[in-house]
Image (tube, rainbow, N blue to C red; front, side, top):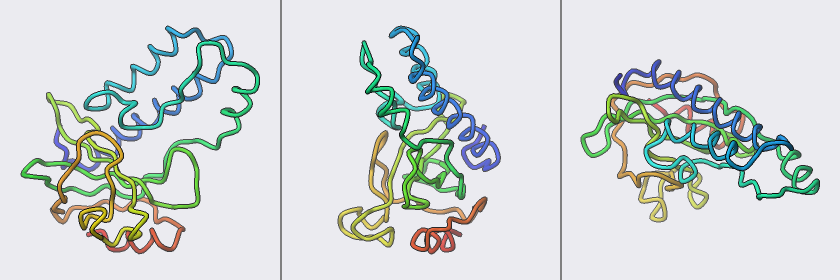
Length: 185
């Protein structure tokens, strides 16, 4: 499976995102035991290079959650990400795809996350997670090393070189990120 097969990358990421949502929901079940919660969380590790909790938000469940904990975390607005675009790139000679999304925990920032997916051991894996740079809004500055995106987990990547292949899926409504989306090519 190639990281430049954008349909395969999209399908892989949809499945990864589904397991992340299942894991979050599972941890909110009152009768879940600690070992079962850990096993569920480990399912995410199969989708990532290294530990998933170093790459994505994973709900930390205390050993004895009380009603206040369930109320607080159950009220958080989370859900499957909207996939805005998938872009084929190379990073230091390695074929990757960038998956542009909104946040797992809903906010008003639009298309503000991207994940790098690469082939590792014959399978696709998420190897890096980045968030839109708050200093420059995605246009590139010294803080984000002219990428427009900041490292949030996984490998720290040098600036990706687009190959020209991009699949645009859903335009963001947020004006600032719509400009970033429109510029993908």
